[in-house]
Length: 192
Image (cartoon, rainbow, N blue to C red; front, top):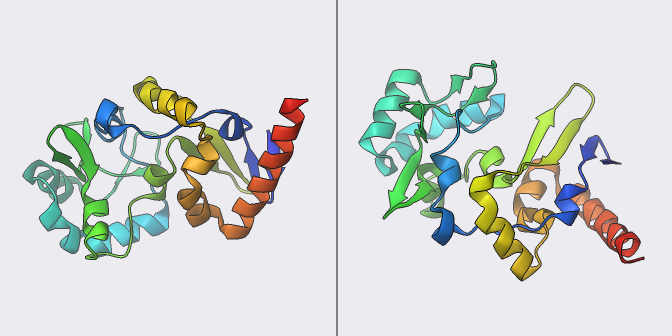
């Protein structure tokens, strides 16, 4: 672990390699698991605001779940998250064939909304836990992403480079530039 501004960062994001491989996993992270995508309080307000514009992109099951539960829910641990369909799929998930995609992101890609998707989804496989004085930035190893790890290794793309856009979105350009400097130094140390 190392400190970068007000974050404590796991070396795993520098050492591990990762590139999403949707053709292999079919977006399993959107339909597996036992909770919705983590949300910030600000993101709950965004979802409430954009839901009418996103709704036409969603499946009827997702719309039913959102209209029954709300655009966001409090999870069993009290954290804010996206609602689920029958405790499985994220309510915002849509399918292209058998591949799960984000309905919010599809609306964004078509210029309907200006918000891409929850930053927790955009950051994956990085998970951020906010504390009072700092945020912990960790790599989350999930077996459904084994193909992404293999592809990342094959292409030699470290996690922090794969999620660059999301890290900049979450922490800012300056933070990311500092992270790149740390990664360069880390690489020199590892080669010795």
